[in-house]
Length: 151
Image (cartoon, one colour):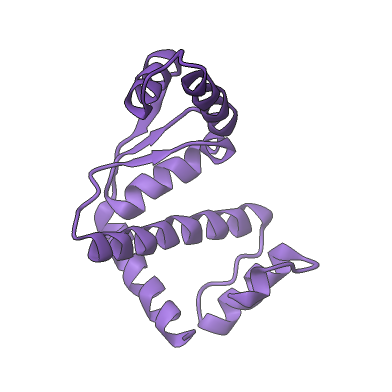
């Protein structure tokens, strides 16, 4: 929703949007944060479903990199909402990728496949397995109705 592009008060924008679409309005800071994280996880599911429809392929797992993976709750919620494992890591993916592409340009690595192998061998990952999927299916149904009303 456009109200989230650059609000002066993001928690208030979240509360107002919840009120507008008929969802419970979070009052405590923790509830506002949980609302935002749940919404992100549901949006990820929506995006993945559209990618799968477009490509004709099912994604077996989600590989997440960058600073967002430091939020373990978001990673778990994403696994739960999408019904797919989330493989998180590395945090500094942009810098690592840049360095390894330069190494390939210098002839130190021979291919993107070799770059992936170096990353896999050098940086730990954490896998979040999906759980509580039926609860998320219900939440996703409500999410889809909200998205459709917003169009």
